[in-house]
Length: 359
Image (cartoon, rainbow, N blue to C red; front, side, top):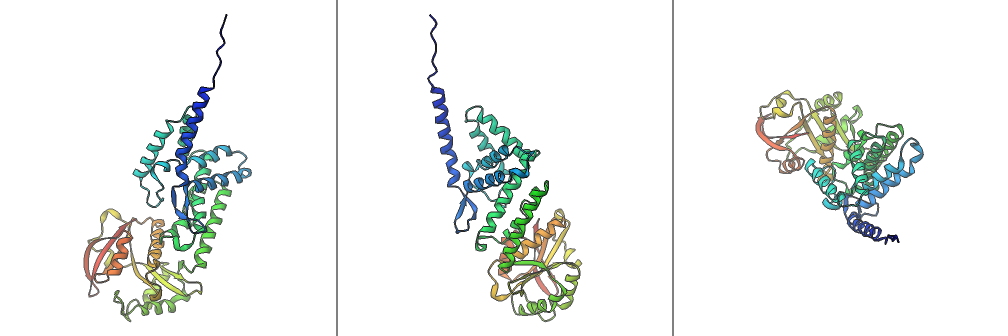
């Protein structure tokens, strides 16, 4: 008599146990905090970020009838699982070594998952990494956009100086492949710009109508550590910079100029021997000032970050600046921004520290 073998369901129970074990692992994302804050002034979790990226994908399903939107949602849900093992590292601090470590730890963990789940996830991660399919491109664009959107919702007091430029432009290069995605990213960017303008932290090119106010701002700096005087900076400097689209100003809510910075064109400075030959072409930054009652609020750093972005668009490889050797505040500020001293010089009957930063 043939004995019929009855399946006990033990294997299914083991799979359930594996599922629970995996869920305990990914719970870490609920308590792994990201760099950004929410609108109620607390740090957001990685899990919250992933959830909204996935929701964005679901809600725009009708915009992409040709796309496997379920695959996009899966990509959005799993894209930061590696941070269970490394924590969140902001994009502006994350190195290639960090990315490699995260990927290795992620794949080691995925390999412990039961078949066919581990194979499906490896396949998805490979597609996400290559960014060739429309699904992968949509996921990546939404990931970047959600980060910018979150910053728009957070208080500006939580932003670092470089995040004004970063939030405006983050991921724009990943959003050009489709008209709808491009438009969505531009709408988020405009929201960022409006937020910055409303806070009186908008940076624009100076105009002819700004000349007198700029000279007044420069004159208010006389007697400070920069050692400016009634002859420098001059109206001639202002007119030259405006004519060459190299003078940037920050205006407050009232339209008053509260800060200025120039990309200078001084051959004598540019030809100093101390500048690195490995980071050419380079550009000089000069005439950086912030209204006295607003100093110490990170405004100078915002201005510098804006100029860095402009120079990168111009394909400059580095930026340099001359700083009076007795201007301790400026020396520390530029050091914090990544400038390093590469020499000293005597120019204009004054002693300067030559500082340089690669872009």
